Structures are given as structure tokens and as C-alpha cells.
Length: 155
Image 1 (tube, rainbow, N blue to C red):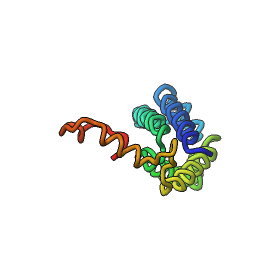
Image 2: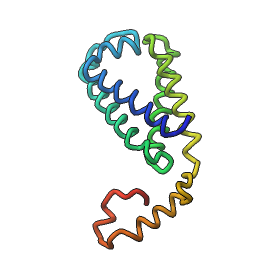
Image 3: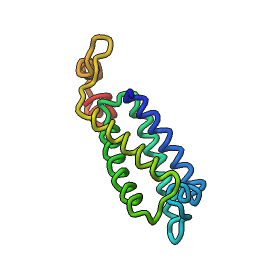
């Protein structure tokens, strides 16, 4: 699966799950864990939804240049830890809904695919490597002390 497609799918799933947690937290809990939220759960779930939505936005932004994006490392970290946590919940068996196993498998697949891409070098585009493009960008920009604070396409 191409990495840009992986980022696009992850972005859409995480953003939609986040919005669902904000709008219908009990329904999401029921589908994932087989139980409605209780205690402080209804108050914390929307905040978790906002974080997942933000994660989806980050993955969407990172899909254009995934191999040189910090989003790839973030995706690996998030999906690896989510796989471990959700697998523990699944094995424990106390809170299991119909979407928990698919969620574990999806996070595991995404983490595995992200891990395989972390060490790869960016491909050449139009005969130029990513480093050549960065060097051209750096040499063409105005010399100003404020450039070090701006978002640059390369470091």
C-alpha cells in the first residue's frame, strides 16, 4: 500500500472517529467496548475525540511528503501504542464491543506499515532527490534571521 494512501485512510478514520466521540461518545464506547461510558467518561470522551480529530488533521497534512514528515514517526508511535493498549483490553475481555478486534488489527497493520517506511529514504522526483530540492530551496530564499523560525519544507 502506498504511504500516501495509508496517511489518507488513517486521516479519514481518525478524524471521523474523533468527531463521533465528540458528538456520540456513548455510541462509540458501545461499539468499541460493548459498554456505555460512566463516571467521568462522558466528559473525557469529547476531549479524546478532539485529540483524534487533530491526529487526523496531522495525518492529512503529512500525506503529501510522508517519508520526510514527522507525521510518519508520530503515526508509528500512536498506532504502536494503540495496538498494545487495545490488545490488552481485548485479551482482558471485560470491555469488548464488535469493533474492538477490527480496531486492534487496523492499528497493528498501520503501525507495521509505518515502521517499514521510517527507515526508507525519500524517492527522487523528476530526477531530483529530496536533499537536492531542499538545497535549492535554501539557496533561493532571502537571507533573514526570521527564516529559522518559519516552517520550512526541509531542515
